[in-house]
Length: 538
Image (cartoon, rainbow, N blue to C red; front, top):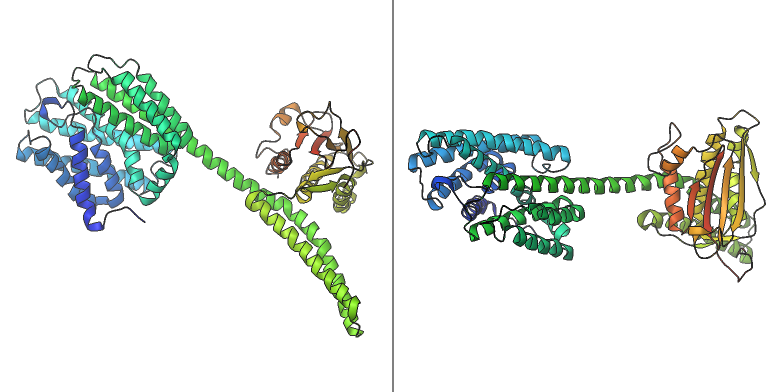
């Protein structure tokens, strides 16, 4: 359910909230005018403009006039106050229109490039507003002679810092989707941790701000970096807003007037920009990781299509054979046990095919595996037969050494995918060699206790695929299992990444050895260990 107010209440709610912001941050004003060190209320107006366009001009103008009257007592007089409010509405309206045209309604903080474009537009807009606003006050004689530059610096930086610090959080709160994502991101116990740290740091740095030069300001980076690295932009937006609100509250509480305001303002801006930069990088990395995960799933779909075809071929062939047998028996008028047996076998084969499809579906949905004893000899024999025609076509000699009668504990469909991938890579590698020098060797050996290493506490079976290709260099070996790294011109570089992920999910491993010819090895836990005896196929 949306928490947004009804449409006829949106504009009055904006005016009321704008006045609340104006009153809360009316701290240490120069000459009793709207020249304060932190002005977050324009950020509320800019977000409002992003949402409603030029329809926001009227309510914003009303809010500015009401602030001059209710918060400051209209020190510039009625006529000039209206003129100043009109200019701020036009100036910030132009800034909001530019932001809306450049980013639309929802795309302001999507990446680092847009973040810095937003900062540039805000800085230019506040500078234009600042120069004209202060010039009008100066012409009216409300600013002492020679102070124009100082008030321009104070008001301009105050507006810019207020917008930079506050606008991201207000923008997130302005939409139902943003509020939901903010709630999902920060509604965690960890958030209380970095908020508590922020309170401690604020007390340390600004507890005695009336006499302190806030030389320990850098401690404020600790909660910001914590929030940014763990919760991305949404956590950072909350953190920098809380810090700035805390600083303003402490300044107001301590009645601190003799402080280096421009320096404090710039430190606030740097703190916010550093936090936002880290937060956006974290969000981008998470998006890339999600995209990569999806790419790997798509690659897995392509790689496992062959495995699915092979697995379904046998039950479908058997179904056809039993179907013809049933047809033959019906034509002969025979029934009884023979026909019943043929139908039962058809049902069994259809169930086998359905099981293959279900396992593949479960793998893509959840990564689930069905571990079972897989005979090494049968696995290698089955995969080798699938490559028979390709090997003969390219003149490649395949040598399969004697396989020990051992069974690996694995999901057969997934392990077939890995071995098929290694054989396909070996076939590509040896094609660069002249005819008669194209060889691939498949071998297996039991790893003893000294050689198991990371492969597990129990025994492991190591399968090796060696080819007569040019081998793997040290430089390539260091990056071979990274996504999108491939030695093939048409390769996506995802096959080995997927294969290693499958092996590690099984508690095994996959690696390449540097040498003058191709060597890839895969190790998997064995299905059964009987004391000091060999592993045997179940």
